[in-house]
Length: 372
Image (cartoon, rainbow, N blue to C red; front, side, top):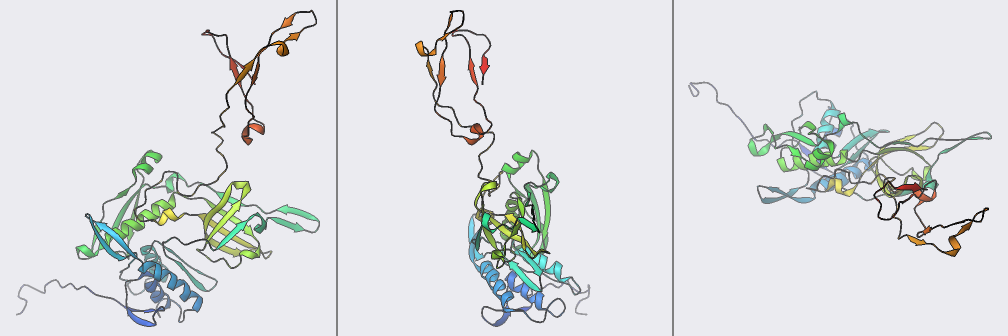
C-alpha cells in the first residue's frame, strides 16, 4: 500500500571502491585515475597480486601529475580542481585492458604492460631523460669482413583518413546527474582551413564526468595528432635505461634535428643484441591547457633549410670599361658589361645550384634574355 502506483525510480550518488595510495600507505576513496589504474591492475578479477616498487614509482609520478591543481573555466568562472579525475562503472567480466584504456584516457595518458611490468604516463609534459646523438646510433652491421647499414625508418605524415580537426565528445556528465550527454564540439578553425574541410572524430570518454576536463583531453589528443612523425632508431646499449613513455632529445645532423624531443612508444632488443627504440615526436605545448591549435604542429620535423626559400642575392654591381673590352681576331672590339654581386653562402645554391641573370635593352618593353 505504500506505493499504490508502483515502485518509484530510485537513484543514488555513489562513491566507489577504496583504493590504495602508495604515496601515503592509506586505502581510501579517491578520484585519481592513476590510483584507479593501480586498483584495477591489482584486483583479483583483473590483474596481478602484487605491484613492484618500480611499478609503484611510475604510478606515484602519474598520480602526482593528476593531482596537480588547475583552473578550468566554465561560463567565465574559474574552478580550481585536480588536473585529471576519473569516475566509472566497470561491469563484472570487463576485460582489464578495456578498463585501463578508459582510465588512461581520463588522464590524457598512456599505459602498457611489457616484460612483466606496468608502464604508466599521465598527459603532462616531462623533461628529457637522455640525449642521443650520432655516436649513439647502432646502424653499422658487421658480418665477418663485410659491413652493411641497418636502416633508420622514418614516417612523417598521417593519412587524410586518420586526420581530424573536430572532436565530438560524449561523457556521463556529473553536472547533469551522470546522464550521457554530447558536449559542444571542439573545433579548430585553423586546422579546418588547413585540411580544407571539417574532419570530425567522435569519442566517448567512459571515465570522465567533468566537461572542461573532457575538452582538455580532447585538445591534447587533437594537438598530439598534428605531430605524427615517428622514427625507428637502432641505438647502442647506452640507451638501455630508457623506458616506455620516457622523453628523449635527439641530435642528428643528417636530418636537421637539434635536441628534438621524442617520446618512447616502443622498445625492444634485436636478435643481435642491440636496442631498437620506436619514437614519436612531441612538444610541451601539446599538453598545455587551452593552447591554440597549430596547423603546422608544434614539433618542427627538421631544422634543415626549406628547399623553397633561397637566399636573397645582394645588390648588383655593373661595370663596363677598358678591362671588359674584347679584341677579336679581325680587329673589331666587343664591348661587355661585368655583373657582380656579394658571394653566396646558401648551400642549396653552392651545391649544384645556379644564379640566373636577366637583362634587356633599357626602356624596352621586349622580352627579358637570360643567362646562368
